[in-house]
Length: 86
Image (spheres, rainbow, N blue to C red):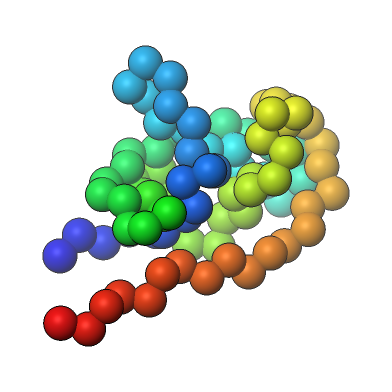
């Protein structure tokens, strides 16, 4: 069984085989974080390395955000898919 953090696929950008997410730090500044992705689960990526539990990942406005931007984050609780019983 693989462990990691599930995040919506829309939060992950890929460029030349490198996967990244935008993370909001404690100063509300946007940082780009390189991540390792595992398998997908419905519309979510399993992030196996690069994110810690509780980090704020940018979900909306990905086209406008850039590293160093100061933002006023609105926290959304996005529920990952429920595993199917076998």
